[in-house]
Image (cartoon, rainbow, N blue to C red; front, side, top):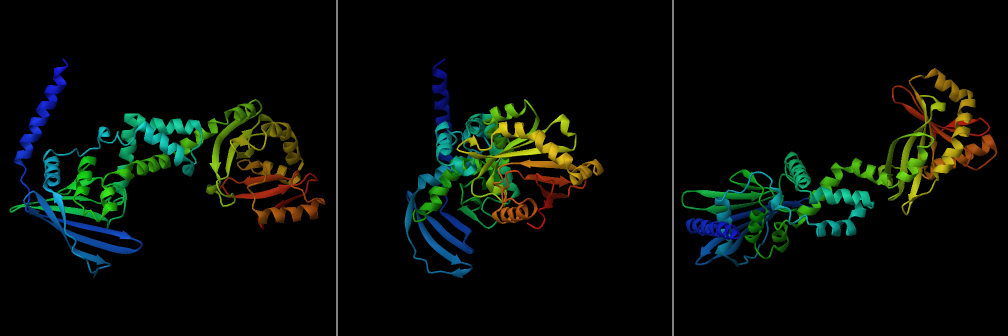
Length: 412
């Protein structure tokens, strides 16, 4: 039984040698390299001419925004073997479907852990449950396949990763025919590759294409090695699973949610990042959830929001559990807000219960001045913030003071 793999490998080797013997090296190869960068359209063109066992490379065209530039004809050489390897691979007909086995060597556990240690914080992935989720997405072959499919589907819908005008084309010229190989995602990793207009997903072919790029274009050669694919697919996957990642982060604070559930019905628990709101600064994180209680009726709830600092919540859950009856009583005793609840059966009143850190400085100053004039205090500690929402979805924000006076935040 142990001899079977060796026999199979030997047969594959014989087949490859047989195919290689059928490969005819073209006398001439032409390459065009077109891309946009910083609003400038660049176009390069090269010719490769067969000389015994190598090809000589000559730069024949270089334009910027359609204007010819002086280009020193830099003569380089490339081993004929690279051309034969490309043509052999084309003859073997690379898969038109994404094969997860072709990409697993890029999505290793070491590579994923390195990303989580060095880059994950840029995407607000800091929690252990989130990291476990990312590891599973790229080490599970079926999920990796789905993530690759999703990424390249977005590629198709966006007409290329780098835009519709970025492309490398390679033409192999024979006496009676021309074989064309091209790639539009040249600024990222070179896939998919098109052979005579048909897309294939072969990282090996993309890498071989890079070998035909002149050595002076080191950055372009490296792009075809596929180094950018890992980060591109990671970013796409994180974007697709943003809500799930936020839910998983909230899971880290489940102890607080469990405590709240001893008193309230808790819904819509999530962690939100400051960049999603104009009023929050930097990478501020908050734990948000909606609290309801049978005693408060169907159209009144509490929006509990607390700042997260170093993985810990700033506004203790014990405080809202101790305060909610007093807050509800204050709202019910207000003629204005009680009238709103009575007259808007399909409307909703939300008590905003947080540490006021999501209020802009300008709004905070306005509220303090109003508090001074209505309640003879410059403290926000006892002020109740309220959002009213009618059945059409329109809403307004208000401040209710302990003495029953209230004012709108429309002008703030």
